[in-house]
Figure (cartoon, helix red, strand yellow):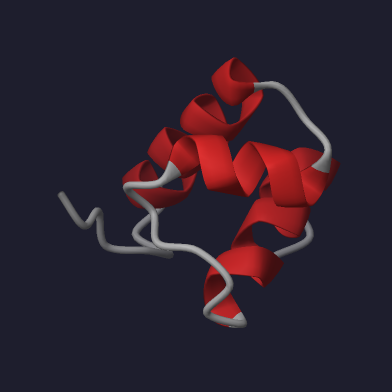
Length: 56
């Protein structure tokens, strides 16, 4: 967990709290006050680290 970027931590927190699904990167971006691209990359990195499962 300490190896995660600040953006990844915020996105993971939003996902764990059920405020958005990993497929809804725009909603994640709005909640986290980050860009859509940052949200999409964070979701991909979290998926690559096996911390989340991508929902299509």
